[in-house]
Image 1 (cartoon, rainbow, N blue to C red):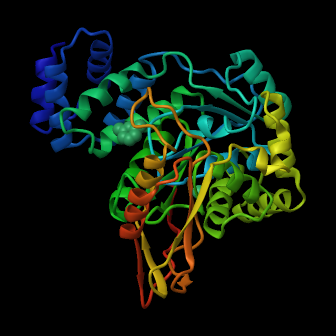
Image 2: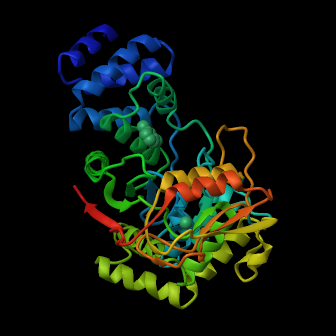
Image 3: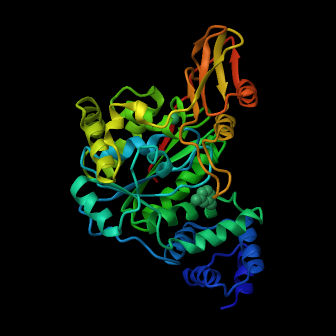
Length: 433
Ligand code: URA
Ligand code: CA
């Protein structure tokens, strides 16, 4: 087989065979095919697209390019959730203990990553003593006994995706649905998921800015998952404004605790109930979405979800007393209000720009080496559609620097007040095929 023939075939709109896709992924992972040939193929895929069969083949070739996690020693159906990312997205912190409390085994491999705030692990490390450096055996044992554990990403998962992503980044081929869909799905499948719930965000703070693009990506991923034997569904949710009130690490942990108690922000609570219900049904712990939702609401109300969170923290070295004593979380030295300059209705809160503001305070990483300040961030008091008086606080800035003028200026530029505004729709679509 010759790489040049594969490039020509795709350039002319042909369909690559399973063997051809394996050849190119294998050869590239091993360094036997040069970047320039793979770049040419990626650009051909960008223009000519891939069939469903090619997308599934590409996904599985990437899964088998490195190690895979075997979760078969865990009883039950392991359902993983993936979010395509957003601003102040506290869902994982809430969902993991919530669905675990109704009997869904949660074996979460999580990363740190770059972004506006840290990843799930960074957020959890706001809790004194909590750690994710546990052995695979301890991880599996904890999930079997406690129903929930989080382990740091270890091992050499999907090396083909890492290499391809870096190449796509510098060849203007990131934004291609077949490449994005296979990239995301390969990582979930390699991490051992039996079933997958996807939260595909749309809006200013999302990777996919329009609902149409988000739906196309969602359909692509759902079809890949189902065709390789992983029950997969997707929810398209709003990320035009940040989710919930908190953007920051310790602030989001606090928000997660409030939500597990049933006292969280309305949008975050609704999204975790929608995603959680899908997870519970896929894990066969309820027959219908309505039954699943009722179970989730029950464990929020009777305290079982919060108890699950506490025991999870304790089993991984964390000080579970933070749940009842939130002042034990890292605290910022300064809390600065941002008063509204005029009265009206909040018409827009530009999600990605607020994320950047949180990052300027130190809540996130721009490069892998950056340190995160766990205490800092933003706490919104108003969301889109809310009325506001002149001088009323729009949000609180949590900072370890006294001077936040540049951040405040950015915030004013990205929170728009007008005479009229409506609440955005939170759940745009549910996609099952
Ligand atoms: N996220 C991924 O993991 N892969 C992509 O290709 C794009 C976004
Ligand atoms: Ca939030």
